[in-house]
Length: 103
Image (tube, rainbow, N blue to C red; front, side, top):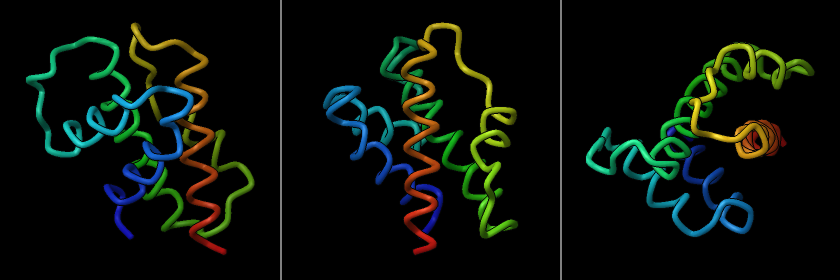
């Protein structure tokens, strides 16, 4: 699995909470496509891929981390236009997917 694969799994897991657009915005962020503008969908995709890439690096180094979520929160900056609720949901799903990877 790669960080991009993780991002796709996280996006799929968040579809019911964040809407169908989370998958497309994540794919755009993976491709580095900034043509989607700076709206909330683009911010969600960018934040999600950044959280997944950082989470993957932390996970690869630690393999098990009770404080993975704290390190991930500390290492990511929530875009101003992204609600705390949505950012928290993304971080929670990243941690859940990473922990499922270990099992």
